[in-house]
Image (cartoon, rainbow, N blue to C red):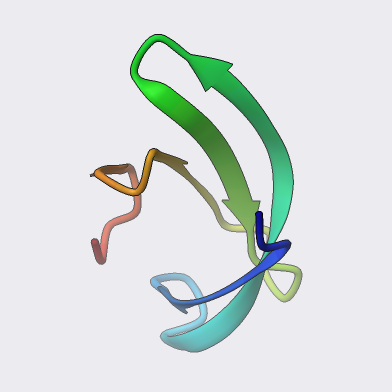
Length: 56
């Protein structure tokens, strides 16, 4: 699993490199928490299908 992800950060207003903060297996799939080191914004992805970020 990758430890970095390029993603649009709604707080910074541009694409940033997010870093994996945590990962765990759920009944829905792999839950991964990502955060932006520039501003601290974070979001969750579950198996790549469910995404809590504002710019999914």
